[in-house]
Image 1: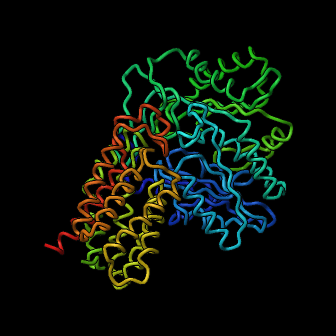
Image 2 (image 1 turned 90 degrees about the horizontal axis):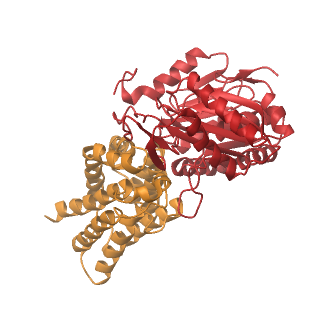
Image 3 (image 1 turned 135 degrees about the vertical axis):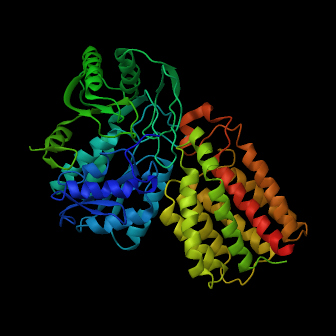
Length: 333
Length: 213
């Protein structure tokens, strides 16, 4: 294992401390509870939005804390869900009197820990709603699995719901919007190389020099299918087709196209994927209304890519364009 | 024969050491079908338990078990935190108000822990989870107890059934938790949660054996 770390046990706290020093104008960090909190929180009269999950997916979620997106992010250990105390503390920190929305990725541990936290917050009369994001088409959604994983769609839901909260929407409205984003978003990813969790010291799985894993999640957990490396165009097709057929996206739809790096794949390759994705969408009569390209929901140093498509409507487009001011996403209206 | 608080404390200390010794093994099992952190997370939780035990020693059994549950929920994370945490909280409720636990009390306590796993994790036997260790172990304990066996013999039966339950997860296809994403590819691997659960039963037996011997 070759990593820029000091001690595997300290990686999360040291990284959070670094974030606090880098963005004092946007966020404050509660190192003990491993929380990144919007500097002005609690914002009175605004629904507070809290997300969180295992570390190792940076910039998600801490990098999305700030005006127009999240009010707080709870960082777990690497690839491990945060614990209920963290979300409970975050809910108290950001509740501006209009309640708190938990945006949860669908992983067994995350769902259980957020559930416990919601029970604790509700016991103190803080209104909490939870929306679970499950957009990964690589997983069969059935009685026989834990359900689809929450992946790239989470980033888009956090941005869009953050904007809705900022304009003063009620907790019910922001939660319903979050569900609407989840219903209209689909993702799939692949890995060229595995990732190494610092505390484990070796890769979570092994891939041969010429092998790739299709259907990877955002943790070290293996995907569904392993095969020989193929061209960027062929792999883009293998990811895009199941996404398009799943919703299904139709002729005339307009989408937000999000091509994401799993951490180790450079922009040069992401744009090659985006180019092919554009061609596939054009062939199906689907227009790209907005786009996002870059490493936003990563898996440590893993090389690989994920594609997320969100079917947009006018309101989502307006909310996507609304100002956002966070460490990882920043734009003016 | 009864389960005293001293034996419960020995049980917890033994398990904490066992998890530490098996940290790499449990993590490796998790790497094959999960996310490669079960040993690391459980070890972090039980090291926290060991650190807090000196302050909890004077509490009754249920107080000790409750403190363990709260510590695990606070420190473990992942799915194992809420699951093991719930197990200990439910065992604490079952042991409430008792100075020492009879065979029937221990059976009720273990059954309450099992119910906690079902409630929190919505799992069934055969889903390739820790429940595949717990359910047969508790059944074996209660069967032995009902037929008049003493604590030691009932725990021997439970630990034996726990080991078989753990091994029964090897051919199973996972239907809960992260391993379920793998579908058929999860078959052929022993479940890490079922494995740590077996250690918990084995260590309860050895704690009782220690006092009996």
